[in-house]
Length: 226
Image (cartoon, rainbow, N blue to C red; front, side):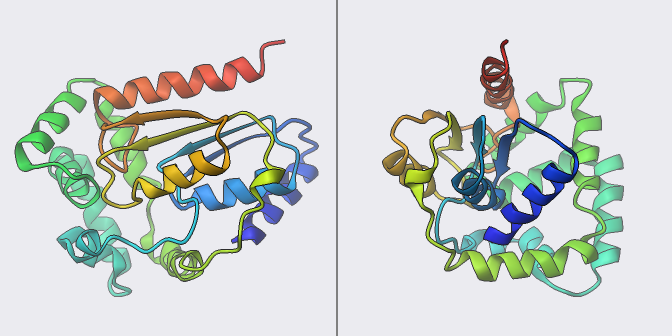
């Protein structure tokens, strides 16, 4: 996993980028932390981030959507099906994602989905999100490799991370447990910590999600106010 950070740094050097802020989401939290540990970073933002040994939530894996995503069969057909559902039945697909990734009951999920799609731009944003996951056949080998390595990741040298940190985590995240935020808080006590419910692992969904996006934007802008 640490090699991800090294690869990112090679790209940044090739592009002659002098100042870097890092944004790590979910499994990308480990890569972001390794980068901040090894290279100069102006600021670090983590959403729903894995910060140590990680095992997928068994309930999420055993859900209908989890079984489809975790299997290595018919990935391109699955990708097509998800895209079609995102275009024609986006609420249905979002409900399935929330069921797998958030500790919410059916009424709470329905309310969040209905609220989310009151925003006219929500449908387009959701389609773009699903498009980013396709073709799943191209993502699957790397995903399985990351899951294997994140079960016993390299130890993070927390003392080497000295940039401002914003960490956002949901109290109802069914995928990446709250212990990952507590680990970061213990090792980086000066971090700015934001806890929300939002859409569970999808901390950018729902009313709380809009606050998360605004808070993150303000955090980055503050680092670059000349």
